[in-house]
Image (tube, rainbow, N blue to C red):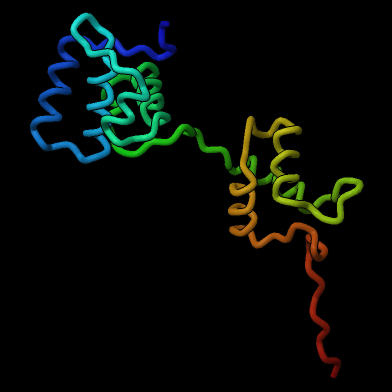
Length: 166
């Protein structure tokens, strides 16, 4: 059965990874990734271990192994060995998206809702096409930064405090 993200290291990559793993200069995270690639190598002289076998041998989760495979196939060896990374690389909350979020919060609450929820705001931003995806946590952090309410009290311009008449 052919793997979705099969690893075929070149001789140069194999030599580079072997020298890096024996030199002791890599941090633990990069070392594990290098070892994963060496064990997953399906080239002619590679061991071609399964993800489960690699995960057991290196004491990592099988999803870590498949993630390293995918990262190597998509971005190459140097990307795999560099620091931390996540699956999300694009900034979702731009100034324009933030302006749309604020406009939503300041606008009318959808029918059948008492107030805006974080998930409802996130879903609405996606439905209106302002973002491809956004989490309710990103919405929460943005609203916290702007000190906006989600509907517990009126938004917009605050009333002036009454001043004592002389």
